Amino acid sequence: MNHRAYPIIKRSGCINWSEIPVLKIDHVLWLPDAGIQAEGQLYYDEDGLYLHMRATEENIRAEYTEPLSPVCCDSCLEFFFQIEGEENYFNFEINPNGCMCIQYGKEERFDIVQENGKEYFSVTTNETDDGWEVFYRIPLKFIRLFHQDYAFDRDIKANMYKCGNYTVTKHFLAWKPINTEKPNFHKPECFGTMTFEDVHSTEQD
Image (cartoon, rainbow, N blue to C red; front, side, top):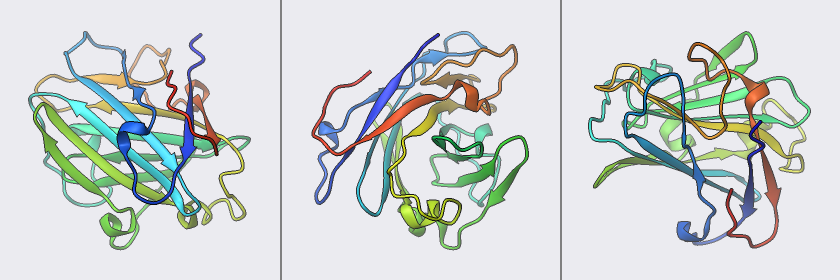
């Protein structure tokens, strides 16, 4: 069993992402290795959780633009997380257009549409020399719509994924491995641990 853990460190002001620990989305699942790579970074402050995810892939697919579209069919980077001690979890899925599919729940999940979603979540996507990347923020006030008194005082269980169901080369990658016969990212029992740390740290797992 792989017991990966990742420290989400606290930062404020102008951020140098090179000082934020890197999380490798490097478990190739269900299909042969397509040569695609991905990684993620997270930090937090009093107002929210901040993410940077990056993919290395040649044939980028970015067809969807409307909220709640099946962006997993495009080149897609995903972040699923569950507050420690809770059963329900959030899934954030995003394509190179900044189109987001957001859900909350467990076996039965409901869709979330946030007005002015790109602005609300501060979504920025960029094409890079070898792929694409996304930056976004999950406001603490958004999490409190579901967990009223939460304040980054409990750690989270989480996973990060890279997929592309209709890309030139279909692929599935994860930070924490999933032991199922068929593709299924919705396995919170396979989430890894992410700890909130109010200390300076550049160590990575």
